[in-house]
Length: 347
Image 1 (spheres, helix red, strand yellow):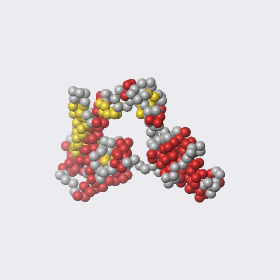
Image 2: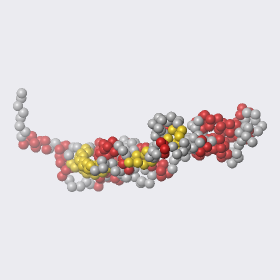
Image 3: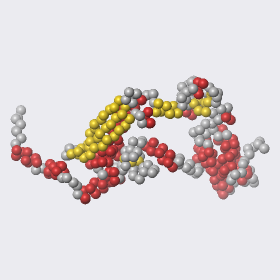
Image 4: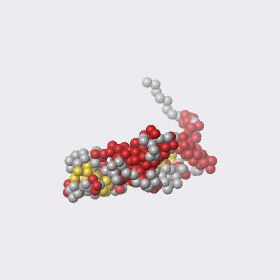
């Protein structure tokens, strides 16, 4: 094997004169950046946001917050662009009741120079409401599904194991101890240990985003107010602030059918029976829909779409039970400008 020549002072000096090394030492030695470099840094963050980041994945838009909220994938994209590597130091605090608190420090280092750019701290604990509690639902004694709902009085009241939620359809009377003795609503999480790893990762994520915002001038573009909300929660936040998005009017007969048949087949039959009554009331000279002119068909469609829209707005398709005949009648009354329709055979 050939002998390795010792590193001489001359070799060391040659290495020090390499452009990359000189540039690195210059960065370390300098006490401040120029104004132009600060502006360029902020511009680079914006360029990364526009070219790489996807709303809902890298950052989120939250009503009432002036800046986009930076998510973990967005912080990682900034780190790649600026050649930064995160290093973590975590402290775990175990509580006597089984809860865990994690405090994490993230240290951002510049990969080419190993220079510490910034630090950020994040804390997460299983005492936070999302981890400490869960929503308990009543469980069916027969099939075990958490699908127990209260039935409407006109359907006998009591309790129903709802099939649309995976239940078996069993019914239970009011006062049923096996149903009403079960806890419902917010209860302490009996499986708190299942959240330990989540809390550890969340503390690290919060510290990472804090460090990125602290060290890269990204706070000029992003905030951290809701950085740990997933996309679904973000959408739910929008709904809590602004209400659910308005349901659009159907634009075709197929959409009308989809709106109404979302309940059940009987509701759709009742709805179409009222539609026939509306046709007879609006165009008494026509013996069937085939006899209508184009203008009359358009008018019938407009009324039917309004009725389907009114029904869906007043009765949630995911609710139980499906709309009653009177509820369908009232939806059609909305479409008929307040006029109540009668089905064949009704007085």
